[in-house]
Amino acid sequence: MRILVIGAGRVGTSVVAALHGQHDVTVVDLDSELLAAITNRYDVLTITGNGTSRSTLLRAGIEQADLTIVATDRDEINIVSALQARALCKGRVVVRTSSAEYLSAWRNGELPVDVMISSENEIAQAIVRAIGLPGALQTSMFADGKAEMVEFEVHADAAENIVGKRIADIRIPDESVIASLIRAEAITIPGGGDVVEEGDRIVLIASPEASREWSHRLARAGVHDVREVVVVGGGATGRAIARTLCGQGLRVRLIDANAAVARLCAEEIESADVFCADATDSAFLEREHVGRADAVVCCTDRDERDLLICLLAKSLGVPIAVAVVGDPDLVPIFERVGVDHALNQRLVVAEEIVRFTHDPRTRGFAMLENDRVEVLELEVRAESALIGRPFRERPLEGAIVGAIVRGSNVLYPRGDDSLQAGDSAIIVAEAVRVPALENAL
Image: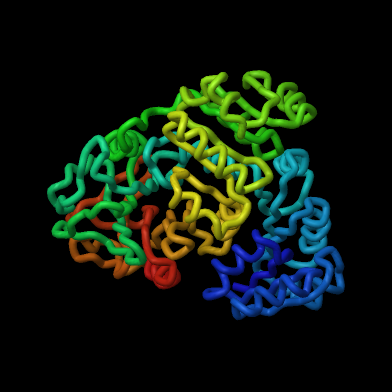
């Protein structure tokens, strides 16, 4: 596929990192230093120029592009670039935005692009998924919400200790499949004889009910269902998160040190309790009993501040701490020092964008392990050679079918089951194997 990426910032770079190995990628940006950083790491073509310029887009091969991804940090540039692209090519056009107004206009059919992705909405939904299942590291929905991908880290102090157990000896709910076992850098599809170790991460495909059962079993001591959340940071991202959490029926307290921002939050989100205060002030946190909250979400404009507030909240007894991290390289560091979930807004948006580069039969998509593992929901072709082959034969090398969507039902296959024409398969596989799997299915 020929892909044109407009914008070489963090979102654009994350998209390039995920796509450069399987596609012909060209990147356009005015900043030659950003482009040089990309060419030093990836085998892609770069064009120095303005993405809103017709001549620049033509020079970049817009007329032959199968997919144009517009992902600069400025909404107005993205809109103009996308409209130019729409006029010059027949391929799909995907646009990143941080504007609720532009998103609403697109949903009303007023902007002629194929897909518009809101940074704030995506991160808000990711956080709802993260705190909705206590103990889960990552979750994604498939089959219109009837199935989920959930990743848990295994610890001996969980409600149910499965450390040292063979996979065959673990009670697995009927509506779930253990799809992968991740240990350090190794990713395996576990067999019955594999033994779970402390710190392993298991990737499950499960129904929402089974996911919640796994959550109750694998969550560590003191972690329980979330009813009250404290959101620190009242910017566009914080407000989107607070609105989404309120919409889930949770009690939300929102804190921002800027009086004007706090006032705006109170006006926009009437169901949230808003405080104008410094969330690094431990006396304030204790006075307002922040330690009694079930989760804290930190999304200020400074990563080091978010880390400090997360750790302060944890020290006061908050079971779940979530940070929206600006620098994607800091995500593993945050989680290593005690933050339960560290999410990078640009990586979350990039993951959603990458979904549109897959086979058109792809109905759902998620990435794990810094893009090394992909989970996708893919419609099975009637002529696929894999139809009718029982799963005990492991017909998909290097991958596992975690669930089958058949009509309105979702099946969680065992050894004697097989794919049928018209099914959609929810597959977990290493990213390098996905193109071959798409061909096979």
